[in-house]
Length: 178
Image (tube, rainbow, N blue to C red):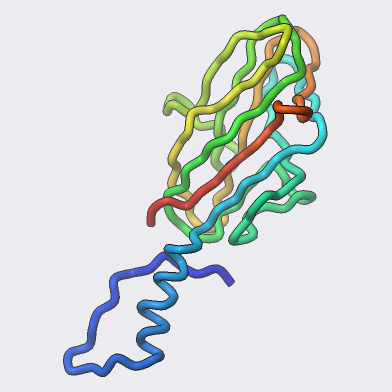
């Protein structure tokens, strides 16, 4: 069971410092702060994105997931908050080389893209590589809220993500504040 963010303990007047009080008010708080929720996920296979269609990106490999907020097989586009608080989102995606159109990446919360909040970017295309990186973003998530990384490409046809060599798709979700 995940730990909760610490709260400031109240020392009882005339109270004794017992092992139970220390464990509840000090040990668990330090443990949580030393090990907050963190998830880093990657894709090991290509995903096809239709032209001009925002698509949530699937992540089937977990580097770290301290609070089990992600599944590599069920709803693998999502990181689901196990602890309420502010989370920092970072990551990016790469498309196979294609010289037509533009690429975009944007964060979403509970299936809705974050609009007009610095949540995404738009880059040109290249015959060499096509990365798209959303802005690093902070969002407040309640328990069971989820975040996703969305991709968009405007090449004129279907286009695959790239997950070879130095290019790939990655999502990092890190709890930063209660």
